Amino acid sequence: MSAESTVVVPAKTEVAQMSLPPPAPPGSLHLPGNRKTRDCSQSPLRGLAIPSPVPTRRTRTFSASVRASEGPVYKGVCKCFCRSKGHGFITPADGGPDIFLHISDIEGEYVPTEGDEVTYKLCTVPPKNEKIQAVEVAITHLAPGTKHETWSGHVISS
Image (tube, rainbow, N blue to C red; front, side, top):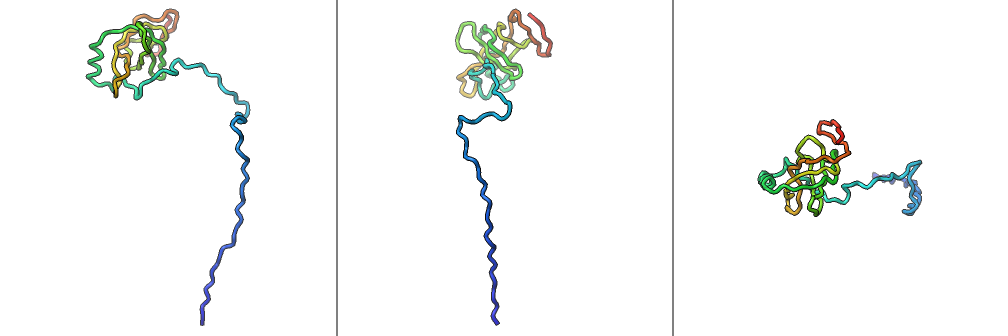
């Protein structure tokens, strides 16, 4: 008696090939529907170098705080400040590059706005200590004709 073994081979199935359209040239792409591109105004912070990571009063070392507090007091004008982002820049009164300002280094009851005269001290930004930032910032004169906001949210006109 001989046993025959039967090998079952599955039948070939045809796989449906999907036909994709050729990619469109880059210049022919359009936004779907009635969408239009937005016209955005130029941000005053665009192009200014923000230190990374942003050093705050909380993360600053004690020795850096002591060095800054012993330094001279400088005068300048607030170039811009964004409360929601928590930073801005000061233009020094004696000229030179704009100086970074963090929200944690502002002293007083008002949020700085463009044109406010401020006094500040300087502190280096780690890790390389090549950049500087303003610390102990105090508003000395509010910009005339502008609305100023307190940290609690009240708005006054100057």
